[in-house]
Length: 117
Image (cartoon, rainbow, N blue to C red; front, side):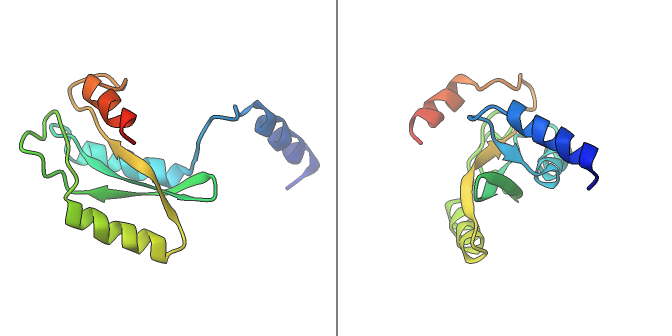
């Protein structure tokens, strides 16, 4: 990396707020592909971190009765995927889900769920 690029990179590092989350572009791309694969239903999955960065996203099946506006990850699938993540020396950072018919802001149900984490 040349000197000018290093300088620019260091300047950008200072701009990132301390409470922000770094997410690898591939993890974000996988979430977008997952959401576009089923645009009429909520899709959901696991966010995987290593150190302080989201390095992967793992799609999960939505087993909710009404998948157009809610999601439930199958508990057995979730346990299996968590074991796989931990074997790879990574951690679960959180979960994601889409809002196919709403805004990207958290819904009331999302807020209740977040309060219990």
